[in-house]
Length: 56
Image (cartoon, rainbow, N blue to C red; front, top):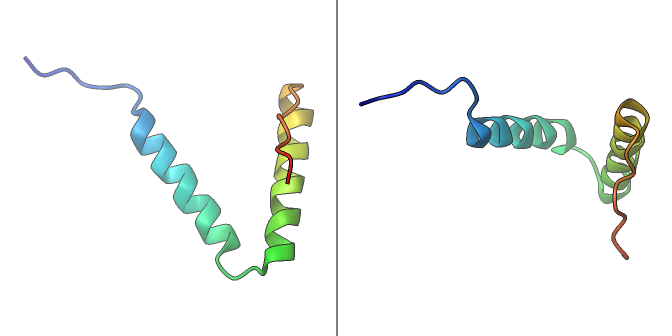
């Protein structure tokens, strides 16, 4: 018995990873850090949830 999936978590993860990789492929380290800082701010403003910051 085969079922069809409405949502594929693994495909979504791979699509997001490929998009991020395409965005940062030609950036240097400083630009990559800034990219992720801006994306985390966008997430926080859109969804109202703080992202746990790692101690770097």
